[in-house]
Length: 320
Image (cartoon, rainbow, N blue to C red; front, top):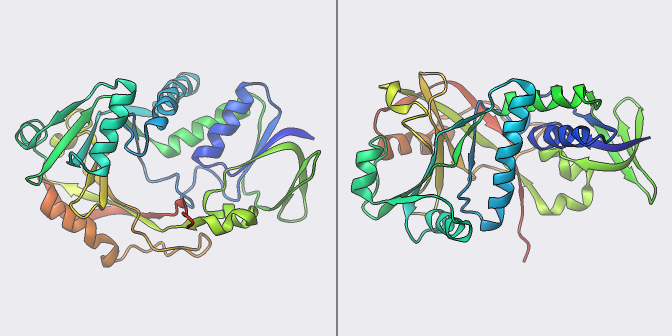
């Protein structure tokens, strides 16, 4: 019997396995695919990390600790995982995005600056702000490379003695007072004292009592070609999240390939089956991003360039 089984080895599961192994816990991880892979929500070249979190000031201590752990993983693996760029939160000052980020700044004394339209246009001319918009800039933010992060964490976990089981689908998780049994496809089973479930889109199937509270959503990521890539390098184009006048959100990261930037819609995706997700990106999928490029950015071409991708984040559903 092992101490802890980790089911799902995407961003959350791979990091959990690494930290367990670093503490000397006898642990093993299981994934139905071969991580890092493109079947969940932990892929797509880049992810934003930001400290002035609009979703709640209670996230800030967690993010600060995460930065320290990312640097530890970089040092242990010899791999660059984080590129600091700073971040821009763009929208109405009293909107949920900028207002929430300002609340986090106030609660934790975060370095930041609020730029009005003229200041933002001078410093970050790539963005076209609406008349009522401001831009909150914070320096403690940047880009994570999710595939490299997962690979580094799993490699380190294995070096520290953890088991990493790829292409090992878990079909059931059973528990009693003394143990958890991890049932594998093909009839195998593993016993553990504890289990971490980090299966993202498949969580509701393995933990049926949670199914009513979770919703899998198809999200599209798209890369758009640049007229002058030098203006979109990480030292000149911070990661950004933008709240539009109707409350919808768009986000993007600087160029990492010297040719394109990644843009995406936050939520608004259709409910999806993770085993039957439509991986083809349609003109309808791209329409809100192309509209955003046309009306809110300078120096970005409206025709996307490869690659295009779809991912499946899992969202908690509120109940009334």
